[in-house]
Amino acid sequence: MALITGGATGIGYGVAELLASLGAHTVLASRNGETLEAAAARIRDAGGQASVAVLDVRDAESVRAVVSRVASERGRLDLLVNNAAGNFYAPSATLSPNAWRSVVEIDLFGTFYCSQAVAPVMRSQGGGRIVNVSMTLHYRGWPQMAHATAAKAGVDALTRTLAVEWAPWGVRVNAVAPGPIPTPGVLKAFSAPRERGTDAAPATALFDVKQAMAEYAARAIPLGRWGTPRDIANAVAFLASPAGDWITGAIFVIDGGEWLQRQPQ
Ligand code: NAP
Image (cartoon, rainbow, N blue to C red; front, side, top):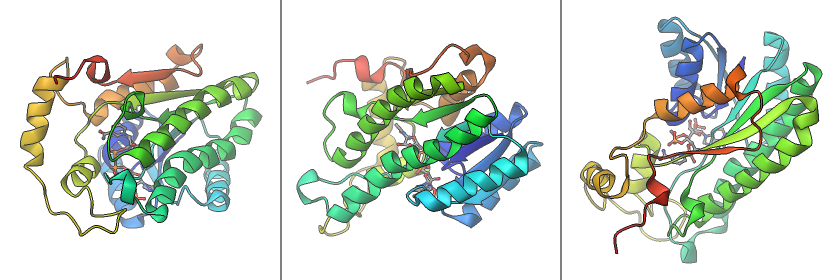
């Protein structure tokens, strides 16, 4: 059984869809019950197994309650994918404390709360896998993303620390670091970079996002295309499979070579 936070949309849904097609029971967990039910129905319509859990990963107590419920309903919990995240661009100088706190709490605290909740279940069943969804933007400077880059740097640190701490329990903790993938969440963040998180007036679409993205892919991604949720899902499935038995504390960059390439001046 696989619990996927943010599993109803974007990359999380891609992960759920692939794992379900491989025979896993998937539990999609996030805040919006309607979106969750619709996503789970799509998976079931395709012949997979999916159920839902309404959950705010910032609330440690409700995270523990949901994990305990789904683990007892399903009998075990093999995989946790910490994918939920907040997503918007905002200038650091005017980022409000609330916006900063919100993203750090979802991305970093949420990853910790979910991991801490599943660890005893995995320990008692003899092991399990945790895959954190990180990013690559904190490997270099990335303007207007101080909140998310700081949080994901923390996620990378958690990945390595928990990998070592929980290895004796058979719990493997790894991360995937996607490059740019035009999910609806990302398109929204690109289009309205100042809509949330600052006192500035709401921004309207600043440029043709799809056109700008096509140009960016040609110029800045060595493998010449944007990623897809399936690109990330494939790596998660690998880490969750027996092929990942001797892998823990690893952070797999899946970005078509984007972050390694020197950007044109
Ligand atoms: P997305 O579709 O916006 O996914 C975010 C998901 O997180 C949503 O399903 C959302 O559902 C859920 N979520 C947000 N706050 C939550 C909370 N407090 N509690 C529970 N769930 C919450 O974005 P995405 O592009 O697929 O991103 C997925 C992951 O990939 C994120 O960790 C992101 O940082 C990472 N990533 C994405 C890219 C990219 O280019 N797309 C690149 C690098 C890394 P609700 O609103 O219903 O709660």
